[in-house]
Amino acid sequence: MEFRVLGPVEVRRHGGRVPLSGTKLHTVLAALLLAREEVVSDDRLSRLLWGWAPPATASAQLYTYVSRLRKILGDDILIDRRPPGYAMAIGNSSLDLIEFQELDREGREALSAQDHEKAGDLLRGALARWNGPPLANTTDHLAAAEAPCLTEARAVTLEHRITADLALGRHEEITVELTGLVAEFPLRERIRCQLMTALCRCGRQADAIHLYHHGRAVLAEELGVDPGEELQATYRALLDGSLVRHPQRTGAPAATPKPAGRGQDDQDDQDAHGVPATLPPDTVDFTGRERELGLLSRALAPDAAAADRPRRVLVTGMAGVGKTALAVHAAHRCKRYFPDGQLYADLRAPDGTARPAGGVLLHLLRALGLAVGSGVADDTDELVRLYRERIGGRRLLILLDNAASAAQLGPLLPNTPEPAVLVTGRTALPTVTGAHTVALDPLEDGPALQVLAAAAGPDRIAAAPGAAAIIVEHCAGLPLALRIAGTRIAARPHSAPDRFARRLADPESRLRELHSGDLDVQGALLASWRALRPDARRAFPALGGLGPEPFPAVRAAGLLGLPEGDAELLLEAMADEALLEVSGTDEWGRPCYVFHPLVRLFALSLPDGRARGEPAGRFRGA
Image 1 (tube, one colour):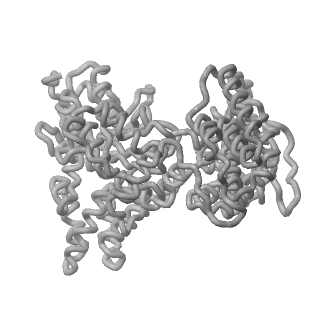
Image 2 (cartoon, one colour):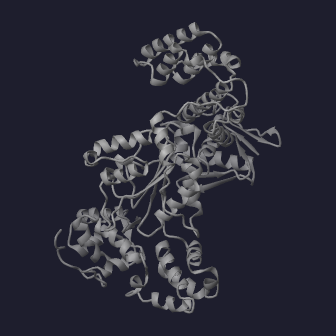
Image 3 (tube, rainbow, N blue to C red):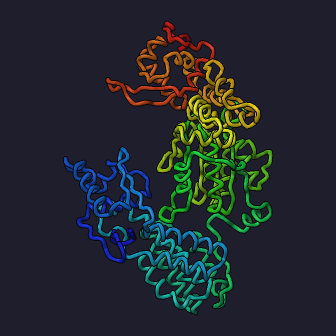
């Protein structure tokens, strides 16, 4: 089955068009296709169908549209109800947008490699996927939300294809096409530069000069700005005669323009120092996070429809849940998308405190081959300027691990869209929160057993399934605990896993057992506890006595001797550090909180932890 959105929304089966009736049915289909198997909420679907004034029967109508799509598309296409919305998986079917983006990506790679013949063919293939204005038969609400990005992606692909044609000396064939494109996109300076180049190489310098002055007038009238650097540089090359030089009509590669922000000095420095590659080693036996890994890989892959948007991806979760391992594995898996290098920085010091942004910037600048003098090392603003100048326009992947706050992270973010940033942290951060946030939960029993087997050895675990199940239960889905358990079993080939399972069974000693070399569950949780504000840090041990079940703020307030509102603020602070989880609401609609089993044991292990949950009177230090 074939799906099309680059033009009127269509479905084709066996070469024939599948009949779909109505603009709104096309809109629901297009919205689910554009989401790429991620959930589209009912609220978003409603806005795309009816704007901000949905009818009273919106939910029923939406259900009807989804039911009709399921019936029309058949069993090969899955449309799942996943609260708060729907997700669609097309299986082996094709989507013209995916084909366009893949061909565009390959074409850009060929262009960067100066294989202009191949680049031109691939980019022409990408443009051939288009069949008119995108989403032409959907509601105005969907078209207004999505069509501009798709149209922009097509224009950028056109520019790259024309760059390849100019490098191959095909200026005469494309002059007419470029003239039409300048009329269609009068404010796109690159297309104007390309037409100026083609005219000059056809011996029409006067027309090229007139085209520049016309463009300058249009920019001043429409936007109130002067021509950009690229258009001015093209005009200077036209006047000094360097623009007339062009490659002969051969298949030999020709020079391509450098990406914006990368001068010759930058290129020379990169050649001298090599491409930075400072990622930690990948986990050889990585397992248990296939769904999340797929989400990260898609989020980091180049997206022609969003080429001008920053790529910022956030992985969140409690200490020990495997954020760093997942991020590093995803970064290694996606290295091919980042030919200009991959950078890594740990934003947490060995004692668990947040590292100052200035120190991290010095580390990153050294990795980029820039030696910073002592006079600059203490000037954070100047370090930010040098860093952003160095990475601007480069296809880099920057992995920032263990981010503590938006204030720490802000100076480390690029100010151009080409570098992608992958961030890990215990909670959501305003500077990176957006479409690509992957929240990690503890593993279910099946994946948890896979992690244990990968660390201990599959044969050891297969030989003791009962002990393995007990170990998985006591590790409570925490990958760090599972890896420690597996490492300890692997290090004792003559000791049965049953023995270690019995040692984990005692809650009093469980955290002490979950320690191996540098891996330590209690140490990982201690860093989260130390990051709490002082009053929350003092309150935390007592809350372990509330037990393993979810509890509302009013129970914590009674235990701590605080007003309910003050207790809720403390609980929210603990949830922000992933030491508590929000677990629905009680019968009165009050939010409830719950401990991860190992976090509760950690709380009870701290001074003043209460195993019985007896009241403490007025909480001291509050």
